[in-house]
Image (cartoon, rainbow, N blue to C red; front, side, top):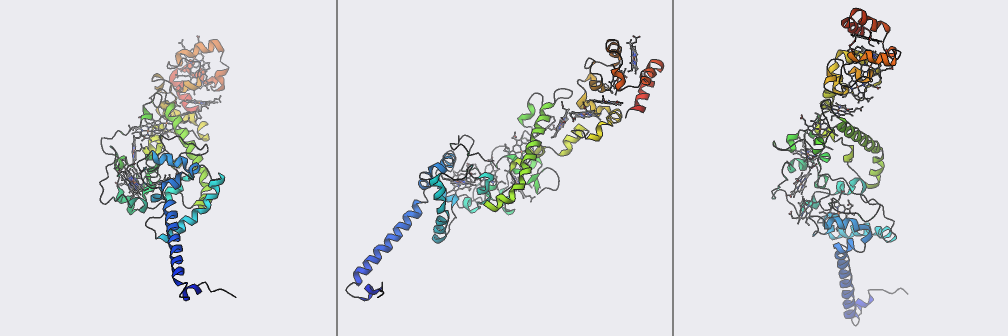
Length: 388
Ligand code: HEC
Ligand code: HEC
Ligand code: HEC
Ligand code: HEC
Ligand code: HEC
Ligand code: HEC
Ligand code: HEC
Ligand code: HEC
Ligand code: HEC
Ligand code: HEC
Ligand code: HEC
């Protein structure tokens, strides 16, 4: 025979006890739920039982301005009804398994998808930009309304606000630090100096007039000097181009990452730092020629050099003296000569010491004769006519 569980309620003798026990059970469930929800929402729960997982994140929170703010204020839905809130808790419950087994993924939050997916509401529940005066650091201009209007969320820039990593040593060996999207390079994921970008890149958009626009890297010895050591900027430019190419080649992996974690933003490492401050034409105008030189250039460099020697001297002259006329050609062609001194008065000494065989790798004997017989002007004309 099936027992009717509600039978006790129709029996007047058992009814008071049934009501009492029902009440006790309901209160028990309510207390348990409240304790679980509150208990799993305090920082202690996020940090201590999950200590190993969140050791690094807790350290960074403690180092920042949000150390007194609950983890859940930013990491759970805002003002959600209790049901959604509980469902969210149940949804993440399986995370307990990798936590206990120590098999969670590291580094944490690679590609910063947590910031990309966090809504404005997480921040605006405490910070109303309508009522708060924003006082940016000296030299920085920011227009919050314009970004909100364009759908750019707070953590798209303030991604490390609660987790500053600069002065924190990470404990978990495989954990890695993240890009900080408050840096200028990060603004240039959207802003662009070249015309036609999504947002303006001119310095005045983000910096006031008296701001010192030259970064410290440029003051280093060897960065650039006319006819002096200029390798500094060249090495920095090459290192940057290599890093950007490497980061960009990994964009092929994005669709897969997005399938796993949802949308991510282009990493800052795909932004070329040099071109946050310099138009491509700034480099090209000074170089005057394509760098590195294209293959076809080599076989025609003589003509190009004679046509505009000053354009080559900028890089190939080893001194101001060698930048006059075509003397820089000798930096490569007559390396036996003393740098900075004209080659003509030296060539006879070299021929006497080494003989003229090597000279004829480039020079036709006719060339030497033209000069020796008809003078320098005839030789220059010959050179101009015969350089390839
Ligand atoms: C003021 C908001 C806020 C608070 C409070 C906060 N976080 Fe975060 N948290 C964020 C944001 C924003 C990110 C995304 C960072 C990114 O993608 O670069 C994040 C990222 C994380 C990550 C991913 C790893 C990382 O460092 O990017 C973990 C784990 C995390 N938080 C845990 C916690 C824990 C644990 C607490 C409490 C001790 C906490 N958070 C408090 C906003 C917050
Ligand atoms: C629970 C409330 C709360 C939440 C949620 C919160 N903040 Fe804050 N925030 C504070 C408090 C408190 C301070 C420290 C006092 C102050 O400067 O107003 C602060 C400070 C700041 C500062 C200035 C100090 C600094 O470190 O630069 C910024 C910027 C900021 N919060 C941005 C954010 C962003 C972005 C989010 C969302 C990811 C967020 N906050 C979420 C309460 C909150
Ligand atoms: C496009 C990037 C960007 C976005 C998006 C953005 N901010 Fe900011 N925010 C900045 C910059 C840059 C500063 C100035 C930082 C400085 O002082 O160097 C700033 C300053 C602030 C400050 C003042 C900090 C202080 O010390 O006074 C607060 C608060 C703040 N933002 C909150 C927010 C909130 C809330 C949102 C989302 C509604 C948001 N920001 C969206 C870039 C952004
Ligand atoms: C996700 C894209 C995005 C990022 C990242 C971003 N911005 Fe913007 N920004 C925009 C857009 C879009 C506009 C509006 C352009 C328009 O409508 O002309 C804008 C406009 C601005 C303006 C107003 C420019 C004007 O017209 O005078 C300032 C100032 C600004 N951003 C500063 C910043 C700073 C500082 C950062 C980095 C901390 C930053 N932005 C990062 C998208 C972005
Ligand atoms: C979209 C906004 C934005 C634009 C446009 C912008 N900057 Fe910046 N810049 C920033 C922010 C934000 C910082 C502070 C964070 C940092 O140090 O990267 C900064 C910092 C700097 C610094 C000091 C940090 C360093 O790298 O030494 C220099 C110098 C600078 N900018 C030069 C320029 C020049 C030159 C231009 C124009 C060609 C320019 N900026 C255009 C946002 C911008
Ligand atoms: C934060 C802005 C900023 C960044 C980033 C930047 N530059 Fe510059 N750079 C400047 C400014 C400003 C000048 C001075 C321009 C002028 O005088 O017209 C300058 C000048 C130069 C010059 C001319 C020589 C000199 O020092 O005056 C060279 C060469 C140069 N930059 C190369 C580079 C290379 C290569 C990179 C990348 C590795 C780079 N710059 C990144 C702002 C920047
Ligand atoms: C003021 C003139 C000037 C400006 C502006 C300039 N460069 Fe240069 N660049 C030179 C000189 C001179 C050399 C030769 C340096 C050497 O090898 O000693 C050079 C060499 C280079 C090289 C080495 C080429 C190779 O094949 O080895 C690279 C790369 C380079 N520059 C990149 C840049 C970039 C990128 C910019 C713009 C952000 C820039 N330069 C702006 C003068 C300039
Ligand atoms: C950066 C070094 C460099 C500079 C500067 C340079 N050259 Fe050359 N040039 C070479 C090299 C290397 C060769 C190939 C030599 C060989 O084949 O053995 C060459 C070959 C030539 C040849 C072909 C010789 C032949 O094999 O018939 C001519 C003509 C020539 N250069 C003209 C010039 C002139 C004119 C200038 C100055 C305006 C100049 N070069 C500057 C490196 C240079
Ligand atoms: C902005 C600097 C720059 C300018 C301007 C420049 N070059 Fe070069 N050139 C280089 C650098 C750096 C190299 C060596 C690396 C490479 O192969 O690109 C080079 C290599 C060469 C070589 C090959 C040398 C060899 O040993 O194989 C020749 C030839 C040459 N340049 C000729 C010229 C001539 C001619 C001009 C003028 C029309 C010129 N270059 C302008 C930077 C410059
Ligand atoms: C790699 C090719 C090359 C070799 C090898 C070479 N030269 Fe030249 N030489 C040139 C070029 C190119 C010029 C034209 C540059 C100029 O007008 O200054 C030149 C110019 C000259 C000039 C005229 C300089 C002036 O100021 O008008 C003399 C003299 C000369 N070479 C002698 C020699 C002698 C001697 C040798 C052997 C020791 C030699 N060259 C080896 C390429 C070469
Ligand atoms: C631009 C004109 C010019 C060209 C081209 C030229 N020479 Fe000369 N050469 C001279 C002059 C001028 C002298 C005398 C130099 C001196 O005594 O200072 C000289 C002297 C010499 C001497 C020494 C002669 C002596 O009697 O002491 C030799 C050897 C020589 N040249 C070889 C060559 C060879 C080889 C070439 C071709 C590869 C060449 N020259 C091309 C102008 C030229």
